[in-house]
Image 1: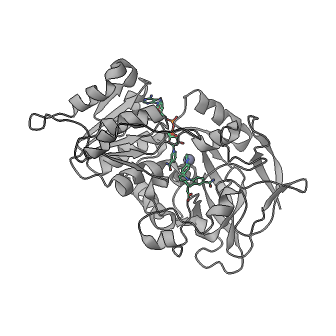
Image 2: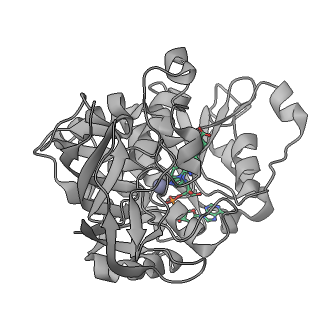
Image 3: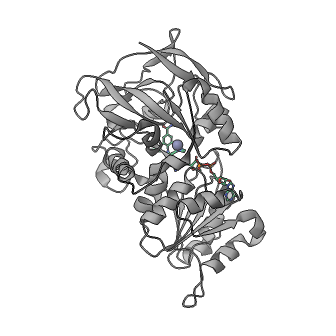
Length: 375
Ligand code: NAD
Ligand code: 022
Ligand code: ZN
């Protein structure tokens, strides 16, 4: 069938909004009508050509929400009419990783997902008879897409697509990093580096976890108001502190009873390896944990003195907030619908598919928290 899509034709070129062909779902697959999609950093990273694993031509997009319109043979967990959020981290519940209960990184379709094809090795998208690659197993920059059944989370039907699409990446990543990866306890002192679409969700996750002190660090003073809006208690402009940033943060977290200082938990939401080091070193000696959420450029390396770890700090990373998509995403949608978490104010821009390239311009200019395309 004909569908409307934004095609990434080549690295560094704007997306081409056009009509492409989508084949129906095969065994174990579902076709979803995408109603809305967010535009996130890795879409930009891949489109720019900086991602060595990026494939072209492709249909990008990994932060969507929509309705199942057709199911392939053998599909049992969802049916036509179900509302779903596509999952770039699937949950098969059968592979060694899913069964381990120790990770959310399901391996069932990992290899083919990275190669931009469906689990049977073929693509459902084409243009003029030529194959288009899928992206992150989701390809939400099209008004219809095909996904493996294990890569959709069924959600309640009263949830607005143009808001809950953000749960497909940013919201779950930020809140999940706090609740699943760090397991922050009430009263904790925390520092969040980078107050963008991820960092603000870390902040609201920390509010949910009843953290006591939530320090936000950014190089953009406009982010002070943004952080406060979601529960940040203190703001530091990293440029004002200069080379003394870590010492300044450690000082802020000191109490009369504890003159060592340092945060119980820190979060890197920048993808900058220098910031990752600051985040680790701003942790409390003996127990502080630093969670890397930001994705650094290919080939980048992190450094610190081993002494930082020997003295009891822990360096961790998280993908999709450690969330098991089919299990956890519907719960996060419920939290939004029950008013436990906020999404609406973070969606600063929305546009039709025809204007999707404007979303990338807004991201480059640092003018948006999240842009959403509404089909
Ligand atoms: P964003 O651009 O909206 O926010 C980044 C923020 O960091 C900006 O406010 C910027 O001013 C600030 N910043 C830049 N340099 C800084 C510095 N030196 N010190 C302090 N702050 C600084 O980006 P985002 O959408 O919030 O995404 C953040 C990162 O998270 C990206 O690297 C993205 O790829 C990654 N991410 C990871 C996962 C995962 O599963 N691990 C999921 C989604 C996004
Ligand atoms: C989403 N991300 C950044 C912004 N929005 C993002 C990028 C990469 C990952 C998670 C979120 C990620 C972390 C670890 C992995 N990925 C590897 C997972 C594995 O090997 O099992 C990752 C994922 C998907 C893809 C590539 C890397 C892909 O589909 N191409 C989850
Ligand atoms: Zn994302």
